Image (cartoon, rainbow, N blue to C red):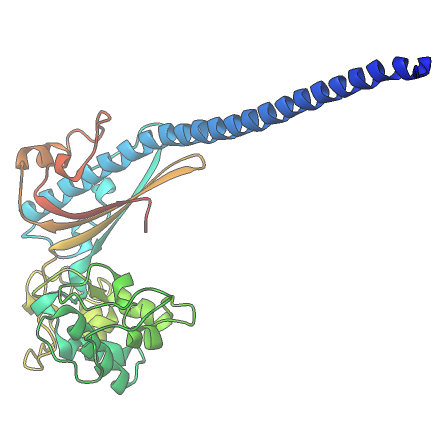
Length: 354
């Protein structure tokens, strides 16, 4: 039997429509894939270009910050040799750029703050004075029992062979899903390390693990670097009291409005306040030997922060540090801690971190 004529006419039409539909779907798929790849490429290129642009904008600020650091170190070296050592910001190193008559390049604004770390109590090694530290903790509002536990925990964390009295610090229990910690028995590397101790988190931190008001006062009164004496020229009231001294008397003695003599303690006799060194609560002094230098350079809405911890000593090239005062501006260079030539040892440098 021969099929009807209409049946022979419909088959080619169906085949042609199916082929056209397949081609259209294939083309649409290619367009979609190309669009996705192109979108990914554009996003990646935008990110890379933005990163490169920001980096290129930061370089002039970074160079200026390190230039200001060189000037600051030169000012410290100049005052140290000319004014019987480094003691107090009133000598001029509190405003190093003004002292050096330094002018930033056009379009840049630079500010420098120099902080004396030897005006704090040291938490490092044998310099950690337990009596002074306990006095400090009770002075900022901690219970006497909590102060003893905090000191005990710090000693257990930092000193090899120390036997804790109030808790078993052989291991620190799991914290924020971190593995169990074993005390390193070495000096503290950061204040964040302190927050690993349960007693610190309980007394000096809030419910989120951040430093509370007492914790901030504690941080402002202690240093992680070793220091044999505490500088009374810059020590805050909490530290002076922790040393067993009359804070009002010491602060009044160094207040330029309350005395006719120098505003700088060059010797302990300049303090004119009874200094009872038999309490065992640390050793008062008048020398500044460790500094934290905060440098902020800005241009429009862009800024660069540089923080350097430095210590007197280990001079590598005294000539270059002295001549930095005569050449307040410098050509851009690749800055590292080894390229900074001064009469000071660079302990740590941090960029864009507080």
